[in-house]
Image (tube, rainbow over all chains, first blue to last red; front, side, top):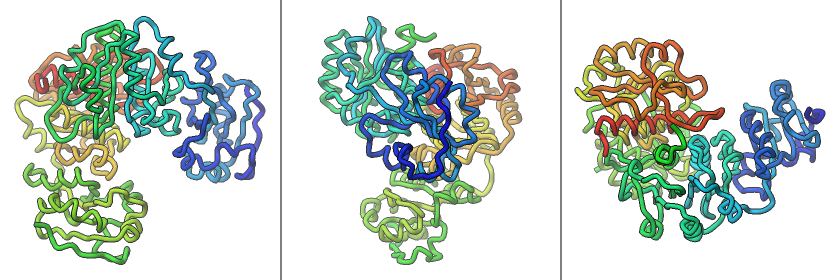
Length: 276
Length: 276
């Protein structure tokens, strides 16, 4: 049972102010809030309380013709979350561009950063990803999708990485940003140091890695560290930890960082017996 | 030595008509022509004649302040290819949106489709990709990038797949569309039949595959077949050929098709001893 839908006829209606011009605004970041798009992502947001990860929905904005099709998903949210519906003209005027999907939620993230708690709460046997300077939303979204596919326990992003709660990153992750625990904002070196102290084998992924990803030995706890596509990981990280490469043809361009993360996670998850 | 730059002051100048509104127009397809963006991609276009793959440049349009930085790349093209330069205002008015890169070439593809010739010309030991219904430009671009990274000899796309020469696909492929031989437009079943007759082991990639990608045995010739992300490969293909899966966590969503192609190609290239 979801809340009774409320029809919105004025794009300037203050009740839907949170959805205005989301394409431009999501690039500037809004503290604590995010936009979730599409049925699959909303389903994951609805399942968030069961995961106890602190994500909640503040409101929905739907194209009127999408209401019936999404009723079962809305029913997973508390009755107190308002459901606004609008015509295509009003909906597009609010969003600022043509939204084919017509299904939006305004979400709210947990008040406190969970970096420290996240690390402390990791299981005895853990596989985590660490991102340094991952500034591309598509790549960050894809990396979360891969993390979910291969059962990573957490993702740690440094302060130079973009917020995975950007609309596009959530969409590309197919909602995995809402299911794979993450923290963002810690300093990369401090983060790796803490992980090493917590018993993690740290492996930096680099085209100049000393071993291939297939040679990474199984371990109780493994952290895979990813850098930006162009520059790669900083020398200070490459020289402080072990490094692995993905065997590939010599050439100017290495793999896309998201694809590379998928291949490395696949190999590590196999080695740890997490998939089979 | 490139052609002497010609300054363009009028966005409606007929000499640069091929560059007008490229964002909208590239979605409709223009027979024989394509837009190549950015220095890395232009470098690959310049190297095309050496690859004897039939791609040529018809013209360049550059932001005036990019000219000096790209002189060495322009020098790899014939003197007969005109080089147009424009101010940011004129450049954006032509392209129809803000082009940060400011480096464009209008390319021309070979007059004849090379499907049959491509198959006949493949080396004794070959690894090829076959795409069925790959309609997303980003995914097709990423798949070509992976094909290049793992040394695939060719990509065969069916008629339901999008043209890899769309601007965005070329860009995402980091120019690999211009270096990995491909054909597009053949019927998927006929194509697979021809590949099987030519001695290829055909492997369909599917979440319900009978073996894991790591279990695909080495062979002289292997064809990896990819379907769309949502629907996957059609039953008629899955039931006619062997299938392989990527081990992953159970869940609603499988991997992105481009990432999946990267993982499968990585495993097959390893098995065939093509990378190491």
